[in-house]
Length: 465
Image (cartoon, rainbow, N blue to C red; front, side):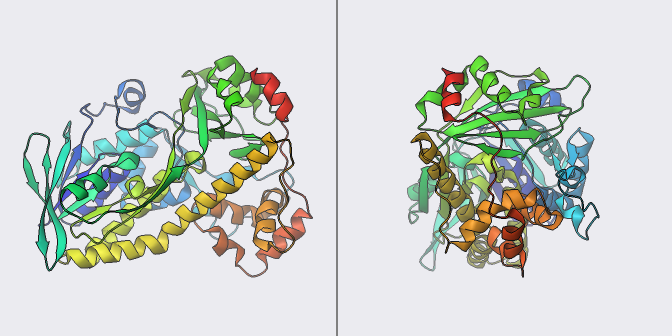
């Protein structure tokens, strides 16, 4: 029976552990944070100390692609999540008012998701992992070194040592240590080649507050979940057990808006946005929780056998698009498939997993970074007193992207196409390559671009002064 070690007991590490255990692997999960798993999601939110996870109580969302992975790979975990109060969300039940075509389409069920706060998701997965035959989760265990050997001139990882010096042999080591993974340093100490890495500050800072409704009813959305309003954006995410989060996020270099740490200024800016002010109509659960210094980082395997990275340990981006957990779960499923195809070939496994990652997930990383860079350029123009320039006439892709929000508010099929992108089900280039769709987007938008109501730059500065 193969022995696998997973470094990190976050949601994606736990999901990978359970997937492989169900295929006959003995899996040991090593988690640096020592706190035991709380009995229920309420305890996880209130008391679970997860110092190793910066975003543990920040805004969180599971896209339909993430739900699909759970339904296909770990259906009992999805059932447990919904049983714990997670929200089942169907965006087609709230089509924009201007869309008169309300007829269902084949495949609409793909757009349904189940979402929850991060502590709820992790508590459910952690409880399931504790009960999973073949999985041993050890908390309060830090890894200090990789064990390795040379085979045919290639480094092969054969296990790990923890901080006490204990050796744990393994046929496969899975790095699920998240955004702050220490794997590159551990590989270097073991004599491995440098890990290829691309990294830069995402350029955004976030100010989040959670709310709950006394009657359990969530606010009805009146604008896109991720709404860009001039030099700031509003992210409104429904969650489990009648809770939701509201996040204001801005360019990290915008010194004036750092005053959004103050609850009165934060509240004033949200309240000045007509389509979003009602999200304040609940009982606050937290103060304003800032988060900055978020790195866009991509790492690619050097070909070292016996070790792979998944989810945020492989690549991570600006969290405002909410793609991290969903793509991380998809990454774990790709690993399960690669391991199944190469059960006794550590070199072939690493190559197959790298190929699948580059084909299926790296385009999502590139698309997210490109989207962020375009948004930051737009914010910089607004802060400089300019209107963001429209796409050039020969930039068809840019004109389609700019027209998409308007077309989504008017056309049922374009609305679904936009949701496929937002849901991590299809890349923008795949959607716009469909016959006639790009032209349809431009025709429906009629040259208009989305402008959500809210304060202009001068009014924003007054509100936060």
